[in-house]
Length: 94
Image (cartoon, rainbow, N blue to C red; front, side, top):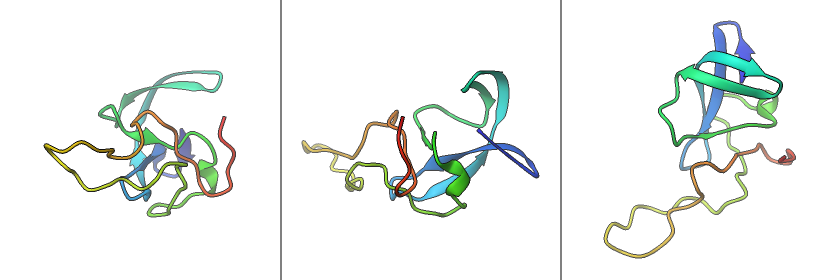
């Protein structure tokens, strides 16, 4: 969770590895963990480390191949799991 001039926000990673700054409301913070009350629907990939190096619309290296177009009715991979963390290029992952 980042703090900006307009309040708290997180970076959400899109299917093309582009990040979008998304305002959130934090209900509780304890140590390095925060409970988000508003702003996330669930299932989004959120940058958890190195966010201070990002800008809205920037690209990140998720460590996964880019998401493939939907192949409904066909077997195949659609990219990484939604709960996987994203990181900017060269940022360490915990």
